[in-house]
Length: 171
Image 1: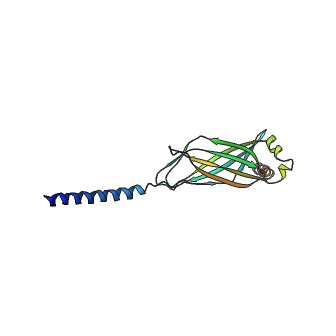
Image 2: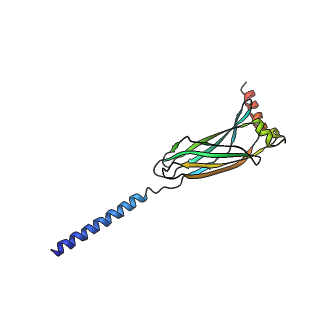
Image 3: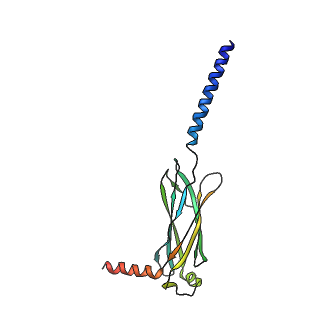
């Protein structure tokens, strides 16, 4: 009788160990990897009567084997070293497994705010910008944030010249 009990215990131990190893290996495949956020250049999208309309673009890469849900983003925009705009979006989005998703950040700056930056010839030179912020992972427990930042220049005069060239070329 002792042999049967010992054999059953050994078999139970071996089966439990094998199950534990299999579960550990299969669960390790689902380890969350931090998505990668790249901030791309800001571009001038247009003008209206009272404002300059800009557009920033982020690319969010999800290296995981499962989709990752994001609850939005926060950002701030500096021009010529001064804060001109800040905001957030609570628009949720999902990035499929091992894919990249583009997020567009709209930004509208009133001309009066541009003029308050500097009285230097704003229309005839490059304006330095810096955009920074975070994309918020919707983890359900606590907000994991993924930072982004980008610097560059925009030139309103060059943009207007390009628009005129495009318009005249289409005639």
